[in-house]
Length: 220
Image (cartoon, rainbow, N blue to C red; front, top):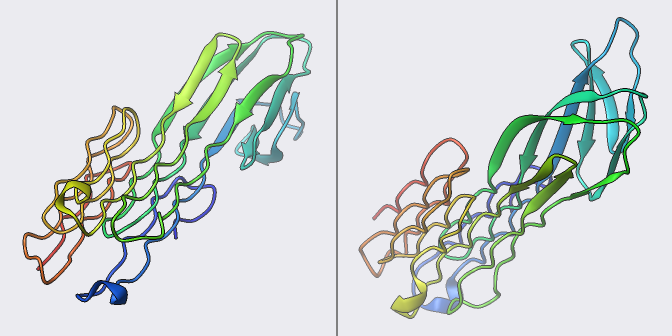
């Protein structure tokens, strides 16, 4: 399974014919959000929300579950952020990673607390004839505009041929394909899933796309 709060895709199932010997695919990892800002020499928080830590002269608010963020400093706060969507579930092909976004935003004070929604990881469908489920989006409703880290795509299933391709997604990484299928397409915050092996008796599924590279093709 994909590790929680990383947006990693679920691992693909394995095994050979007959189908009852197939190994189940893994669940995708949930997403996360980290927001940080500069502070003085004394470790202090200028906002509320998430798990708060201090490193390198900055305060970091980490969200592994949905919550809210509020600027309590009394002045405008310039923040940097990382947002990762939920990873896709694995079937015969691996699940795609959630979209990975970074950037900055200014938050006025006082401000109404704004919502941070953490995307869940997708699951294995439970049967070899259905593709795994996509993850869900992670969103940060900054006052200047909502940021969305898209979900990863689910992995392709073993049979029939119509379910072998990995699932494409508009923002995150595409799911890996089952044997005979092509990897799912990705959006701007991810990479395509890998193709499945061309050999029917091997069932070599492709890996899901990741934040840094395309998924590996299935081997024979």
